[in-house]
Amino acid sequence: MTAVTSRHFTLAEYHRLGELGFFGADERVELIRGEIIQMPTKKTPHSVCNTRLIRQLILLLGEQAIARGQEPIILPADSEPQPDAVIARYRSDDYLSSHPQPADILLVIEISDSTLNYDQQTKLSLYAEDGIADYWIFNLVENHLETYCEPYQDTQGKFNYRSKRIFLPNEVVTLPNFPELSLDLADVFP
Image (cartoon, rainbow, N blue to C red):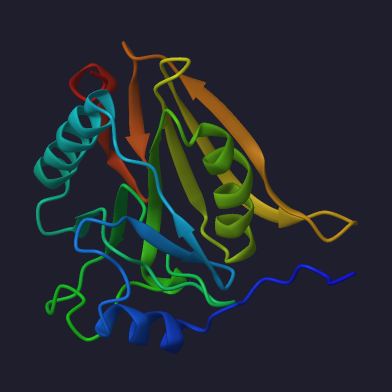
């Protein structure tokens, strides 16, 4: 009997596959803990929510930080996810020299419908493990915002967040690290 094995890739190998045209032009993939993950096609509510979110973040943040939409971030342990939105520390080169890494990242946001369980489990654990202080999920299944903060590791070695809060689509939420900036969720949810 032959055992089933999976092939793990380093960030360098993943980038080389991209350079060689291994992935199709419209193919949505991410590298998560060395595994290449095929992401599903975005549905219209997901796209609308993402467009509204990025627009609001850019308006709110101005030059205080950089709002990035569906762009890669680099995490330890051979991971390069492409969150729906990231607020990164301001850099004059707009991260031309390197994608944001954990020290640069102020907030990671996923918009979830068909990927809800994946975002609540795999991505949540990954972001907590890499010390991402604040993680949000726009849950389009239950129509609310889930905010997570205070990453920790439990006694079994699993990573999670200590605090979870739910905000409804008619509420306003303060952006982490920017106590003077509030996001009106009615301007974001489709």
